[in-house]
Length: 226
Ligand code: CTP
Ligand code: CA
Image (cartoon, rainbow, N blue to C red):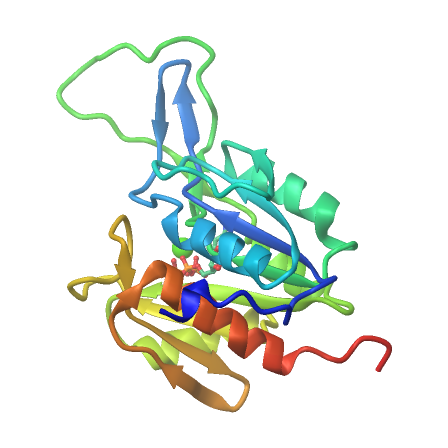
């Protein structure tokens, strides 16, 4: 597996990876989250380190173990992830947004435990800030890689996200396919750039997917001083 080949292709580059799912609190004992394990983001962080990069991971809720040799910042909510990532953004060369960020959070967080009352409960939710879109708008020298989790019309939605969020690459995964998406140790991704489809990867381990993705990133980086 190419994974074991340590290359220096990202030596000296500062890489920020987000991983895992956000947790959006409802009350002191409950929250809304998603199935993200953090495995894809952690695999990217580890691959970047093996390629010589200086790596920081901003992680939400994860079930996998983080890699060693990277700086780890733990957050809960989409808002906290936004703040952590924004703070680090200027000093980064490459940002990979693999986290599964909540699109909505509770419109108000109850300070006391919500009591059951009646047969039906309606929760009021409000949109979170799109972190990747925010980074895209503020992009200077950074190489920005987004993810797109889709179940249909993958190319169309992935290209929409690439353009709307000003990404250099979008990694689309069909989260409804066997062996792809949340939680497993494998993934099936297609990588898109401004020019369209760049590489449709077969079913691979998340580690192998990560190192192939970073090879594509490395090929597209401006040279130091150039
Ligand atoms: N993302 C983000 N902040 C959000 C929501 C998403 O930074 N509040 C990022 C994710 O980390 C991912 C990319 O945007 O890199 C795409 O996420 P995805 O859920 O696939 O797309 P959305 O733009 O949220 O659209 P939708 O869920 O409606 O498909
Ligand atoms: Ca979303």
